[in-house]
Length: 568
Ligand SMILES: [Zn+2]
Image (cartoon, rainbow, N blue to C red; front, side, top):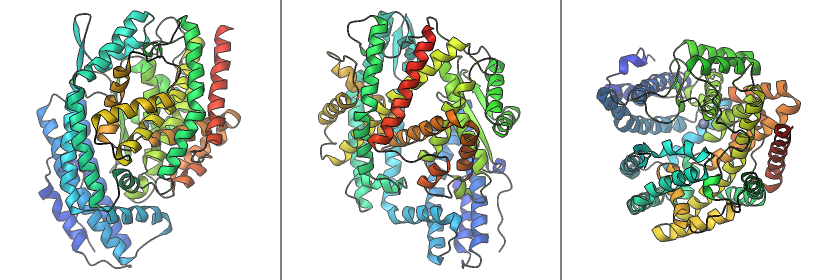
């Protein structure tokens, strides 16, 4: 068997689907047997890697320079024309492999995923997905275009965010109200958009033989190791452990701020440091400490980060024309990660870089697996790598290795640990809400959705007085893009956060052993089941109250100890 493959991703820069289709046709036509299956699989893997990297390069080029219309056009060609076709071909090729009955121990997880993809694939759904994509784009356009007037200037909603940390309470309240009002102005339009997406998603599910979109998503997301019932246990565990812990944090905050009642605009102001912490001033001040931090954690990780810095694989600074947000993506052909973000010199930038670096270490480690599918993991494992890195790096953020003076490091650590607990509360709200939307029989009703969000928010989010602000409270779910664009993608963050906390706990008594287990888990890529990957890292999937209670108590105790040391 000989296969002609595109020589490099760069040769596909201007490719259309018509240029790529013949490669897939060859793989679809060659007679496949148990004997030649492995060779055929390697050819498909190499083709997939070169095509995948070409699409990624188009995405990187566009997000780094959104004003360039040629780059915009190329990215759109890849995402809307080529990628859906590639996905369709992948199901077709996977069907061939499954039909000949080929398998291998380190491919059994991948083949289980192939079988599931084949099982739920419906020709009729391809068009519905592209219709949903159009509605997603409409959501992005509406929410991306929202703005507010701040001191005589037009600002975006994310630009209001820093004002929620200011010491002046009136300033915080103004920023909070403006942010919510921007969404409430478009509430009717966004609700109508969601109505359409809801109907289409339920149709996708029924076309594939499922009772509702939740059951479809559990299959489509390859959630073989936990069920909707486990997620419901997670909600109950949050209600019993993280929710009261956050309520205690809020009570402390109310006292520290000296206010009678804590309002939603009081939850983000930093209590431990009078002035905003500025960790770095320029690129060098950002990248050099990061190199030292990863060196201190593990020489191999340090070398990988240094390689990225030298090879132009870090695009970190905010500048005009760059898309918002941050991501880590992988160049599958050459086996290197790429980090994109918009740093402006605040502590969140440090967290983002460390988080994305965790993903990039995962990419380096998993790339040693021979086939492209063995290098890919679900979000539960991917976020374990990044969220663990955020916690494992914490002890090294202080100068002379890292960015902060000792008092700044304490303030930043307290803030980060408070975030960990608040995020569990938010994750439970979002996950329980989506379950209700797709299974209650009332998810099509806009008013019922808003009412249910308030019910769930009161269940999980305590210690803040929202009286008279019900509409503003409702506005929060319209801001959560996952609910609109990526249904049921959220519980993964909760599972991974609890996994990361287990590594953090272990690292306090055995930092070297924890790092070895972390690296080993990353190197498995997608060759093992989710519980096995977590077990390799020394963790387990936690949905139970007892497991969550232990970790929440650990975080709370650490926050308490840090507060004492700030006073001292
Ligand atoms: Zn991540």
